[in-house]
Image 1 (tube, helix red, strand yellow):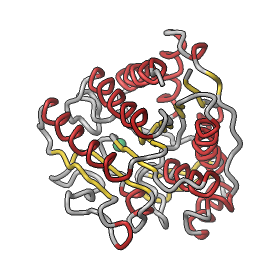
Image 2: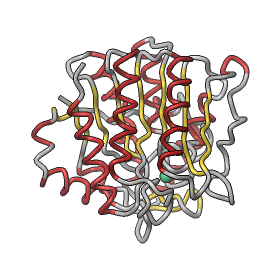
Image 3: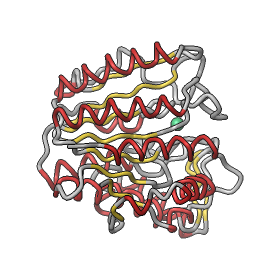
Image 4: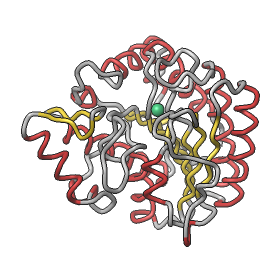
Length: 314
Ligand SMILES: [Zn+2]
């Protein structure tokens, strides 16, 4: 079974007229329910992370800025990144769900988990909320795996169409967390980082792996690049746990990413990442929702992703 983390609370991060809106989760939930998938999953239980726990990874000042904006009734952390009155609580809850999923798969009752959270997280750097992201859910989950479970070999796979610059920054000098991102790159595409020569620093040298993809790249070439880089990342870190920044905005119909993938491509990506988890990590995998802005194909892609997680045989 797959653990499924959802909560109506995640709808209360109110971004107004914005592509990263509550309707994203409503569309996903409706689609999964229609396919009767939630009843095939184990319901994940979680507690929000505390402000102190988040401030162990992010600057205390950055955490305060989000809290204060929420207390004032709302504001912006940058032109794209909205804080509503409930956003601080929702962001702590989203990160808490991802950390709880790590606890659950480490306990071993279920092999994998899907966290359908918002706001997304992978652009949030140690010191800055940006790009729709307040706190970095997947980085907080990885850090939790280090401190609560003493893991020393963690792999984060980020297939969101945007480079996970925040996650890269958090672990750039770390040798215990390998960050692999495949993303659209070039011609000013957001956020502009993630070149192939960004490979880590100090103890982290060789533990950041970027596969930048040009607009117009064929699906076949995308998959070849993904497979080669994933294999290299897995061989380097031999992960005890695999975390996924699961963004679905590389779909051809996504209004923001439009890299050219189809729903079946997310099936392939999911299978390959599950293969790495099986080979190295006893199947332990936690997937955290990032982007995806065409409601229909987002919901369809998440369904396909979840069906693969459910089909996993340890
Ligand atoms: Zn994205």
